[in-house]
Image 1 (spheres, rainbow, N blue to C red):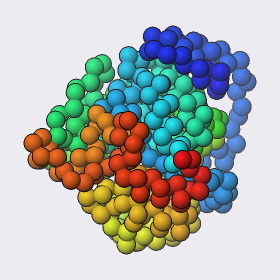
Image 2 (image 1 turned 180 degrees about the horizontal axis):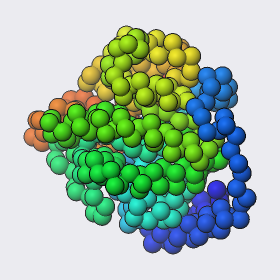
Image 3 (image 1 turned 90 degrees about the horizontal axis):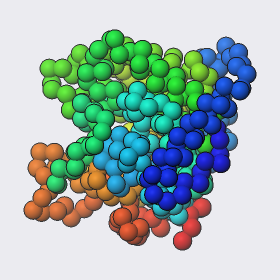
Length: 391
């Protein structure tokens, strides 16, 4: 990928001009490269040996799920009119300052459908910013959580007092259930992964976030949604592998029994059988977190926790991060800078908005928008454990 496009100037109009140029350069470069035939191994799941060799080359991976403080969801983060490289640069600088070396970032299929070249160009700029801060993102392709009806264009403002009130799924209920849309989803996966398949700025691809999460769907539709996801999930892995990425693929398990294969759900079986590296989510107390790691060790593959840290639920940096280091498990907490997602508010704010009374404890997130930490002790701990943070 072209690296010279990391100069993003100031102002969103200049950024958009650079984005167009980036897309043009990318097309020219890709068109000039000879196509290389894939070896059988490149089209299959990585062996455990290959996955462990890859992991041995990585530092201990510590980071956060990142959404800019001025974006309510992944659409607002990457649409041309709201893409904000200057803020990305500032906030990823905060992450670097405490020793974080990775982030998890959500994409959205409609961004590809609307403007594939512009989307790739903006993503390239974002990756250049992350690389300047020595941060390698995990990119999430699909997501079953929260709002089921994503729409391009201006996004709704945050609902006062409500956690993650504007987050949207990918592909969303209508596009998910319409089988005629499946070729578009395949084109999105192949297009995005293919464009960055050899890009060392990317750590890994997360194929589907919590695929069997009911999200914002009504109860009677959940079973049909999960059944459809179970059809598409292995295909999505195949679509990604068809363009031969140099980065590993994963999809994080998040509920159920992971110790006994006979007790795993259909979705969990697909995730564990398809993932090159094993990832999981846990928002429980430290002993629960450690138990989840032990359940997954039987797989004999690298383990990454791609979501944790919900203070009000008992998941904290103090409790979980030292355990992650002990087991050499990657750890990515939810949230970096408090902003429009309002994920510093608890999950129960969906039923009881915190409007008149604010919670005494932040749920997620590390920094305020002015760059000061919510808890100095927490950032000091992260610096201490990563041994690479700067003061």
